[in-house]
Image 1 (cartoon, rainbow over the protein chains, first blue to last red):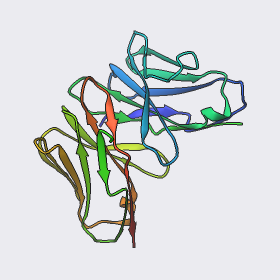
Image 2 (tube, chains in turn purple, cyan):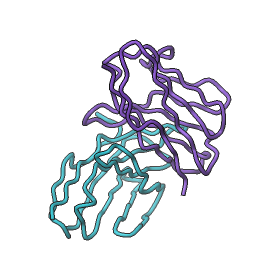
Image 3 (cartoon, rainbow over the protein chains, first blue to last red):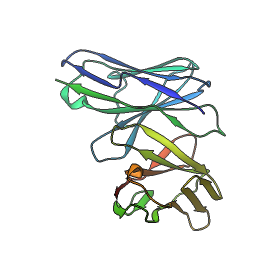
Image 4 (cartoon, rainbow over the protein chains, first blue to last red):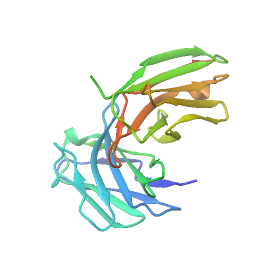
Amino acid sequence: GAVVSQHPSRVICKSGTSVKIECRSLDFQATTMFWYRQFPKKSLMLMATSNEGSKATYEQGVEKDKFLINHASLTLSTLTVTSAHPEDSSFYICSAREGLHYGYTFGSGTRLTVV
Amino acid sequence: KNEVEQSPQNLTAQEGEFITINCSYSVGISALHWLQQHPGGGIVSLFMLSSGKKKHGRLIATINIQEKHSSLHITASHPRDSAVYICAVMASGSRLTFGEGTQLTVNP
């Protein structure tokens, strides 16, 4: 079945640095990828939707300049957390769809800790 | 009121028990997903359904579009079924709206 690979699974970084998280669809072409953030004991919160070759659509309240999303190819989307702060510490997870009539495949998530 | 409501929020069962998790939603949808999230965080899509019933192994998912309700059943539950189960609906476009999740613990 469809597989989405997300890396890294865990990252610890210092305040002020940037962190890049990758999400790859391994055996299908993902026309649309989604990035979510999950707080402890809470459900997923959609941050942005990215379509290959175009700018990401961010949800209200999500800072575009802080969470940079790039979807340069049909198999790769990246989320860069810029100038990270401790409050950015969270679980980030991506998902991808091959097309409108397909289900969602989720990555394994990235636990980000900013110290 | 959330667009997607799940019940119960927490569920503890003994191994072998039949388990039901419910999901009600308030918007028109094109599809509903049941997801499983293990303690490590990774999410697995269990079912995508828009009508009727689907079965995969010990898991059964049903949906009633008219009543805006779906159920996830687990037969002969096992401790490895312990996880958070999340209902998510797809309304307009491609975005999913998630329920708060049901924490299931199956004791041996």
